[in-house]
Image (cartoon, rainbow, N blue to C red; front, side):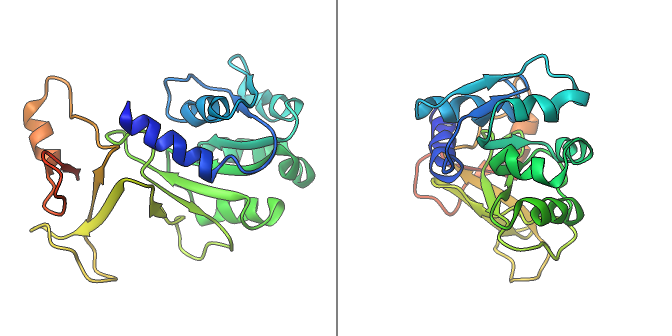
Length: 214
């Protein structure tokens, strides 16, 4: 619960800037549904419930809600909406459009940036083993890399790129991402060996029992 609240208060500060509420179009148990439901409620804003929205009508159903403060979707949803909404409708969809949960290509991101404007598209990153999300990136300009950057760590979260001996690698050197902080989950249910392999003691933290997920 501490990890969830840490994430949600970050979304309040980072995503809930434009007027309006949010729209819940997926299960609240799914990561996409967490901020779409709870972030608005933390500030007393409306949540539009669209649990029965079919993919072919998702864009129209969202537009019926009026301009949303933000909406978090998977990149696949952005591709779907790109075929359903014209540029004006895309701009009217939400103050901020966030993509998470899958590969977010620069081609897709830049097509949305061109229509809704710089700063109105963001990316969020977080593996299943972290509570919803651990980093984010507002796209203030077109993306030049193949994939959208995963951004900076949210508060009370750490991210490192380390080598095989868990030492930080220099800029430009390939390494493995390690994530620490409040959002790190306890491990895999009934899989102690896999938990021990993926959840390691955090050598960079002074907090007793702190772990990194690799």
